[in-house]
Length: 74
Image (cartoon, rainbow, N blue to C red; front, side, top):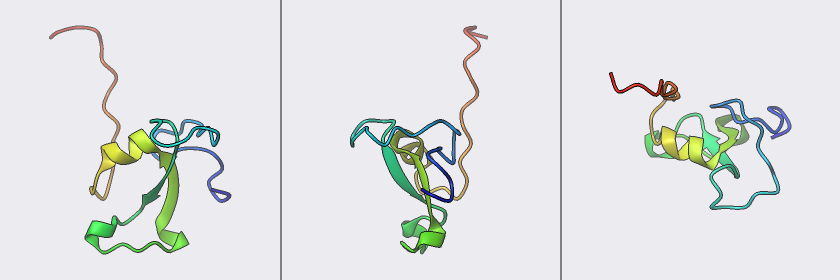
């Protein structure tokens, strides 16, 4: 966390280190290369993220946030 600060690498939001799992805003360690794709647990492959952001990314190599809803149906 020291290299990135207490910020989520995906959304840029502040990570409250006082929140515990399974809180969606708790700290989760994201793997740059997911373990399911051969990535390891070494520090160079780990980044801090919110649990929700990390789970939303899944095993994809890149993560893009969904656009904000406009409030319109069409």
